[in-house]
Structures are given as C-alpha cells and as structure tokens.
Image (tube, rainbow, N blue to C red; front, side, top):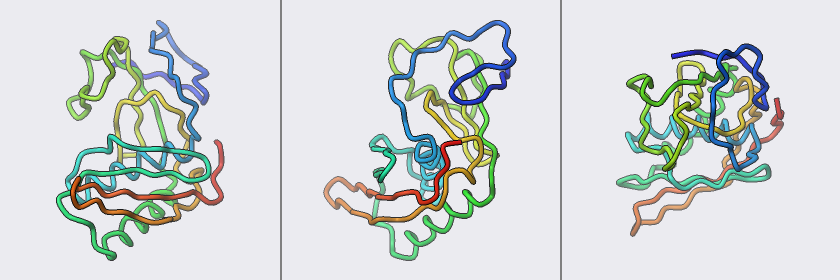
Length: 174
C-alpha cells in the first residue's frame, strides 16, 4: 500500500505515481460528513449493526438510519450522543491513504464500492476509531466537527429502522 499526504480539497503534496480515482459527484459539508463516519462506527460498536445505507448529510441538519433488531432505549440514545461528543473533543486526526483494490487491508470491505470503481481507492482513517473507503470531503481533525446535537429519533417497527436526526453547532470547515 502506498500512503500519500494531502490537504483538502484533495491537493496532493507528495505523490508518485498519481492515483487515478473516480470523480466524486457530491460536495458534502465536511464536518457533517466526518460526523457521519463517527456515528456509523459508534452504532456498529454499540449495536453490532452494519454501517448505514440511508443517510442525508447536510449543513443545517442531517439524518441517518440504521437497521436494528429493536429500538434503542433513551439511555442508549444518550450514550450515542455522549460518545459522539467525546470523539469530537478527542481531536482525532482524519487521514487518507490511497490503495489498489487488490491490496486493501483485511479490515476494509469492498462491498459498497460502486460498479466500475477505479482500481485505486481512498481509505479514510479517523484516529484508531474508524477506517473505511470514502471519496467524500472531511475535516482534518474531529474537533473541527463542532458539537453533535441530537434533534430527535424515529423508530420504524415494521422496517426495524432507527433514524437519528442531528445538527452540528460550531462546526469548522477545516
């Protein structure tokens, strides 16, 4: 695996040869998108679920849904919010690596790569807390996310889907 160092948005400082990546079609609000990574990993660790396949991440407010066997309790929801703000305050570094698909570390799944994805992919690491493939915009450290504020939750009993609505206060674009 080859590691490259760069600053957002994708200005590459040291690279040889240049990786060929698919163009990213979205311009996410970097703090909220980085918070999405943290929330995904928090839910995976707390509930043993998969990362979300249904998220709407925006500057003013965001929502993300998780498939769970049962609705989380009020105490569990409080733990999610507390954990998110602990991770933000921990000022974890957000880093990037480029890697060929056939050289991916074992802990990284290619399952969600879109059809026709380039051979060279980007791995995003947030401290030692989260690692996954991603082409989105991110902050340089979690402290730039600001405060995670829960706006509410919804439980769909039929679909076994738990939705979290949140906003960020005091976020920094990085």
